[in-house]
Image 1 (spheres, rainbow, N blue to C red):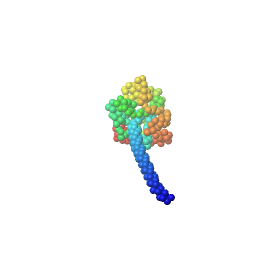
Image 2: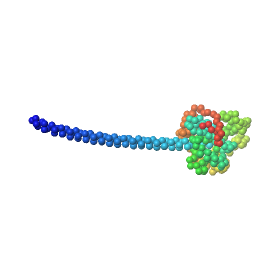
Image 3: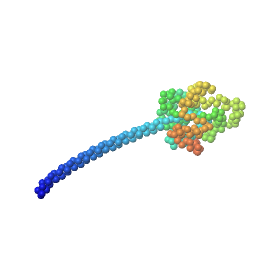
Image 4: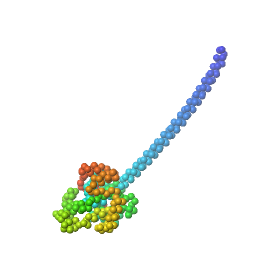
Length: 299
């Protein structure tokens, strides 16, 4: 019995050693697999991080491109006289600092709404190439100018306001005699003339002649000489074509608040907050001067 116990002891020891060796091999294999899994996980995380960085760079690039596009915008308001144009322009001036854009006055020689061909070229070049002043809103009493005629692919955005022709003429008639609240000290061309509009019509005066009702047509027709031929059917059709195809939005003086609301929705880059500002009636008056070629500048 004793000899049997002695003979079995080495066998158990051998089995124990074999079991231990197998266990060690198993553990080493598990550790190796864990290391491989950790390596794969680390590589997967690294790939995700690289992809995330690339996506962020792509998004930043798209954001920069989007910002560049938003900033490379020019709006031209070729304002028709006595259509609430001064009130609307002051609204634009009050918003320019808040919304970070520039407002420039198109100051033509002798306030002529038609520019010479040379001035047209200069104007198109200045508006297109003057990147330091973009985004910008240009305003002035000038006729529509088709930038595509000068090879410009990205044309400016045109907006305008029209008014009932008779109401506009009556307003302009008294403006020439009494001015307005914006520059009360300025001497007007007909200052001192006390004749009413009705008296002018009865007397057949030139300041109230029916031909004066034509004035809004050339501002939409453009710089063609035919645009200024009173009663021209071609000029009327061209003005209608441009209004429909070349203007983003044209408002009506009698519905100016609706025009402002639609502009805020269509061009928030420029007119964000315009409706509230218009309703409060807290528009600043006056114009700041500048030495720039095209006139006044405040933003």
